[in-house]
Image (tube, rainbow, N blue to C red; front, side, top):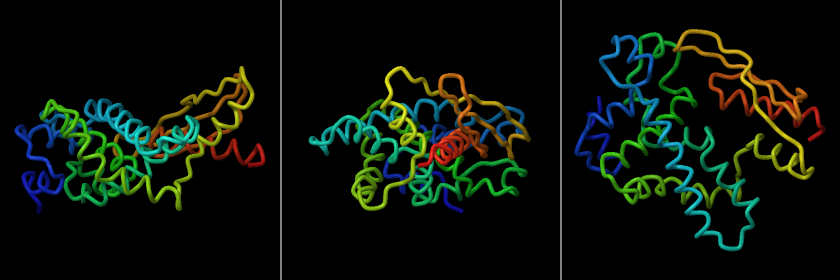
Length: 228
């Protein structure tokens, strides 16, 4: 099995504190199973999400000077969506390194898109915190973002939320909101249900193994019902 040091080599960053990388690879189910003796990646994911969004926005702003704001927003959304981040994590071999509970492992957690996407964010945050330097996080992220941004022109990922938002924005004053309506199952096999509301009216419902997936499916249903 690949060691943390070897995996850090694949990432391309030499950690001073390997416990940060270990935390970035630790699912909450593992932390719970070990009675809280291990840190999970949840807080790192929170920070990494913002860092990743900024790096993507900064890169696109510089790399595509003629693109208007709306297209930049859509391109950024496709680059940092769950499907994209999952592809990046698979390229790194993240699945092999994950620390999961026995239940999560047996239910396919090592290849679950929502987990792999979250961990790409947590690794980004771990690099930033360990180095204290946004440049190190930027180097890591751009290894994946730059080629993906080029490829996205030919094979863009379907981002139903962005498409729905763009349609609704054509009518000033309309308010779009995603509401979590259900959450069931143990930590290793969660299922979320979400409604998308337009001015408090339900226009779509969706479910998934993560809130992001449920929201995408709710937006997809709304688009279908609207004839798109």
